Length: 372
Ligand code: PHE
Image (cartoon, rainbow, N blue to C red):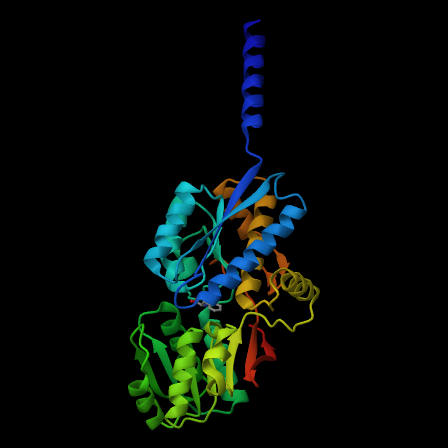
């Protein structure tokens, strides 16, 4: 009898626990919605919300509705740390999609790692990001690959033998990317005639550019974000440089041609995806994104969408919202996404191809795809 009673009691407790189980879960998102590169955050948020909306329309995940909490990191590492802590401690998110800029992700990732909250950065390409720990993943390729693709394009397609690079001294992404470009360009047999850092927040680059132009480079590598790229391009043209400009994913913004105008023509950059690709995933995504936001999605939107799909698929496969179980499911994932097929390597980086985009007539034109 006693045994029967305790079994009954256990059943009642279990029932109470399962009834108390919430019918929703909260997914966190982070991006720079304001600050030096606000289009990055805007696109990231839109890609994230579209993915969640699609999942909720199909019944959510684990039978729960997906709620979202999206925080603005303002492109600032200190603010990034603050919002990661808020999402985890206050909002109790089960996982985080974020953030965009490597320098900010490097401030947020240790907080997610310590709390055992799995996160995927959609677009942080600096190599150090996922090395923070085993809960930290990314949906994009890394800068050593991106720099190598740029160097090969400069050497083989643009036929440049002499290159110069300019980068932001206070930004892990832009500095690391220029270093990767330099290493790869020299390995191909090219010469880097000038390698010039500028302080963060600078608006006058004439001193660095004058030095650069003395070396007569045949290509100028600018590994900055779009607003600085536009300024640097304008000043390089003013100083008489007519050759090609080359850079990385930080160029991807509808504002690049608005700010840079003529100066960014004959410009090329490596990117994560091209909206004019014709895979079924890209076609569906572009159509749905346009219908909702009345704009063509850039790579930031595509990767935030992909990162959200990856995380929700991992939660579904884990059959749990437990951080360690989601992490294990992520590590084992194999999913065809908008930006390509994603499987993670031992450092939680996907192996993916890069697109080369040309700025022509004020538009971004797809040139070619380069595989790893
Ligand atoms: N790759 C950049 C970084 O790591 C962020 C970025 C990605 C910017 C894609 C624009 C487009 O800081």
